[in-house]
Image (cartoon, rainbow, N blue to C red; front, side):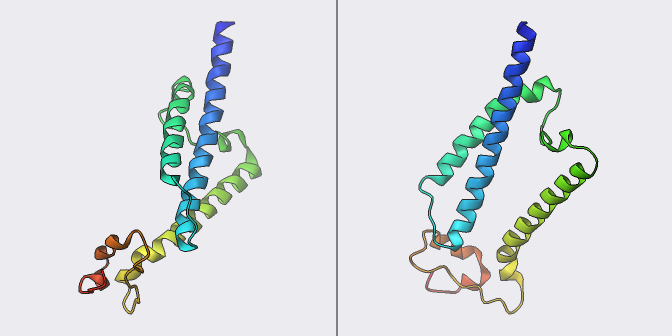
Amino acid sequence: MIRRSLDLLYLGAGYIAGIFLVVIFGLMMLLSVGRDINFNVPSGDDFAGWAFAAMAFFGLAHTFKKGEMIRVGLLIERLHGSARKGAELFSLTVAALFIGYFTRPASSPTIPGSTRTCPPASCPSRCGCRSFPSCWDSARC
């Protein structure tokens, strides 16, 4: 009886950890894309940090119960055949799109002919401009 209730508690904690993982993903994507469209999430970094702490806390019991160190396939491991293949393909496609989206701006200072300039004065991350070679000589930064 106690073993069964503990197993259910661990399973519930695993699902809660999965929910917090999705919350972290949503917040980070909203914060990242929001910078490009001038949309600010007040205290978004704090919310993501607290969600990460909650995910780590709730995920520990479930992870140790299953004898794993890192548990990433809660949904995909339950699928079989073409459904599993489709879910893996979907997740890899989403990952590739986000990697491409974030790689282009990071590599633009190294591309010959790039027109990367300093952020406008209204941008709060203006001091980070010094990391771009095109801004090292600029008096605007």
